Amino acid sequence: MTDYFNARILLDPKEVPKQWVNILPDLPTPMTPLINPMDGKPAPFELAAAIFPKECVIQEVSQEPTIPIPKELREIYARSHRPTPLHRAYGLEKELGVEGEEIKIFYKNESVSPTGSHKPNTALAQAYYAKADGINELVTETGAGQWGSGLSYGCSLFNITCTVYMVRASFLQKPGRKILMRSYDGEVHASPSRFTESGRSYYENDPDHPGSLGIAISEAVEHSLRSEKIRYSLGSVVNFVCLHQTVVGQETQQQLKKAGIDQPDIVIGCMGGGSNFSGMAIPFARDKIRGDAPDIQIIGVEPRACPSVCKGKYTWDYGDSAKKAPILKMHTLGHNFIPSPIHAGGLRYHGIAPIVSNLYNNGVIEATMHHQLEVIEAGMLFAKAEGILPAPETNHAVKEAMNQALKAKEKNEKKTIVFNFSGHGYFDLLAYKEYMTGELENFELSEEKIQKSINDADMPQIDESAF
Image (cartoon, rainbow, N blue to C red; front, side, top):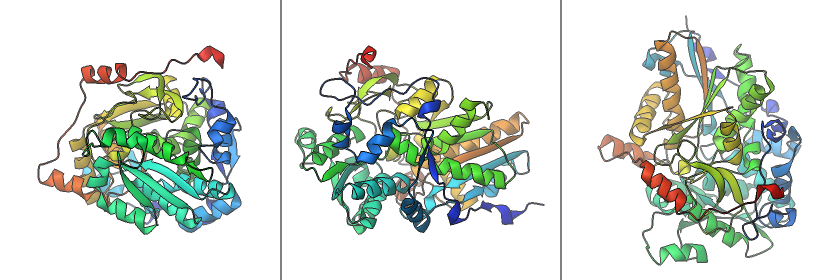
């Protein structure tokens, strides 16, 4: 008989992780540095510290296997939303016809945060360190608005001004996100905007330009350089953001052990810039690299409209369209890539975290991709089965978890599947409305367009022998 009283596996607030997992010293090949776009050389500390909070810059390159989470920040995590619950997806298992003990599906519910996603895990940390540096404004970009909401919330707790450049397509699709950001006193601009040189070059040519994360990053970085009291805050891609998110995977490991599971068979997360995927995957990837869980399968899921890992090129590229942000070695579709206006705005970045690229290149993780229609359909099924409407981004992980469960059933295999439920979709109802009315469509780039985007991007030439 099913014990539904164990459907949610909880941790005590005092069990919030005491440290972040830093995978840099465990990577099979060394991590490449951030490169100064002005001279093509590794960015010196002083330059990086002029853009990001100082402690974040230190964490970016640290080779310590773990980095302590300050006690005050752990208390803020606990007061805010951590630890988050791990759910056994009994309802989804039943809908898929895999109920029983042979195939188990779990999801880590990051949607219980104040802003409805995993983003406060790093937003709170960055605001905490910015306050310690005497910074009075943080400026950022956001795709679907999850990150902008998270940073606006974090800044409000520390009395820091927050300015957000939101990709125009999402700015128009998701008015609720703008309201949420502004309720935390965040200032929100549609990008491309008239307020920066980077934005004006696009806006004046086309006031209805849909925007991209690359353009929004350019605007935010340009804005951040206006004063020594302003810093840029990034919600994904760079090492320290992936680091801060590892509270997700660590808690998941503790919760699975409470359920009598030493290691899952499959770990899944959606991939845009790489933050929520890294947060779930890194603790498990470290176990895999160290030989403690050699057979674990770790899968990142992308939209077919923006498949930077599955179809992009692993090379040096600018982090933004205006070439103002640091250069990174990553899987990329080219910094000039303008993605189709899919509703999974948080997965529309042209590149992916260098950590994720490293893990993928070394075979530690896998990657796959899904169409917009099939992931929204998966979200509808999940809502019926589990009662939570997922964000369009999260639906990519939901869809893959469903696929893996059905695959295991077909092969008569015993599998434990866990995925990161990175956020709810209550600010994304337009996507579901369009699905219901038949207006939603799939977008997929042809190989020709992908290669054209990469080749037209004027990629930087970096001499790796210099470092």
